[in-house]
Image (cartoon, rainbow, N blue to C red; front, top):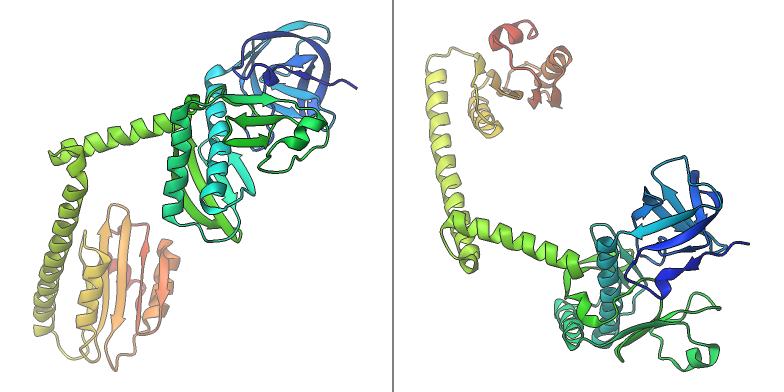
Amino acid sequence: MIHTNRLYFDDPTGSPFEAVVVAHALSGDRPSLILDRSGFYPESGGQMADRGLLGGFEVVDVQVDDAGRVHHVLSVSDLPAVGATVRGEPDRRRRRVHQALHTGQHMLSRALVDVAGAETISSRLGETACTIDTPGETLREADLARAEALVNDMVDADVPVRAFFPDAETLATLPLRRAPKVTDDVRVVMVGDFDCSPCGGTHCTGSAQVGFVRITGLERYKGGLRITFNAGPRARQSLFGQQDVLQALARGFTCGPADVPTAVERLRRDLTDTKAAAGRLQERLVEQIAARLLAGAGPAPRFVLSFPGEDATFLRLLGRRLAEVPGTSAILGAPGPEGTRYLVVRGPGADFDCGAFVRRLNAQTGGRGGGRAESAEGSMPVAPEDWAALVDGLAP
């Protein structure tokens, strides 16, 4: 049985290499190449697979099967021939990201144990987010802050990170944070004297290469807690992006970055006050409109009115006021760029069925909404040129 010699065990940096194609195979339903040796890391242990070039073709996935064969899935179906020598070039920038994230995960998992007794159940290093799952629901924000500080102290200390295959006797003496998932060829990663864990992934060679670790979220997940974190180049990119946003906000508010929260709070208060004032004006406007409409109306009036550009709040205020009059029925529309909002109401003693009318209106216009006999509302995707003509064609 072919067993791929994995070069990344000795060279975690993803250096170019040459290898011989020993077989064509399938990874799932996709054609794959099997090499006698490979520097490409296959997806496993919560770490994403490498990308890069192999034989000049793009590597779109790397997987490992139960026999230990590493499958390289290329962007082409016409694979290099068995026996050919090919050059592999892992994407070293991507590898660098993975090294920092994985080493940062080990350090954060250790810190969570030391600070809060929170063991890591599972971890995942995703394309956009990295997570650690812990049991229980007892972690506090203060615990996370202490764990994060402890990790970054270890980053600053620049302790060596060592990955090796100890013999059984040596393995039995190591202070492993968790038990190995395999019994043979157990690979161990040690971050100074801080953490010692079985792991087959790619890691930094010194803790300073992690750059820094930042916890970005905490949520309940499957009866426990899920911690989201970032590290290394990806964390730096995220930090720089957030700084750019902060600087842009500061320029917009004509203040310093540190003063943005104060400026936002002031803007929020101003907006709240403005919305309240606008609401009061709208209420007065509606009252004046209703007064004029009702002043010239006879008994049991029916109103069919269009108010272009108005919102649902306006329609409800006016509808509520008109519905105070016995025998009244009102069909109110507010056409706009994206269609028409509508509200249909009736006053005490009126026999107009608002819900039935709305069903007919929706059937005619493709609208959505509904309600009871006393009131109904919704919207439709069209803005009719003549609201009154549309209504008259549907109302009894």
